[in-house]
Length: 64
Image (tube, rainbow, N blue to C red; front, side, top):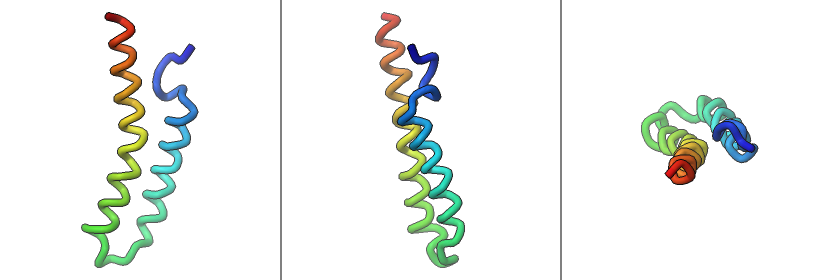
């Protein structure tokens, strides 16, 4: 049984990937700082965030 969303392999992998994308995007051209870089970073962070949110909602449904 999972204690929390951080125990999920899919969350761990998506979080690791988001951190790697953040590191790689540091090397994007300066002129892309506020458009492409921001969009890539936000989209990569949304994956683990959505997994965590779904886990919490499912957990709440199980309590009810």
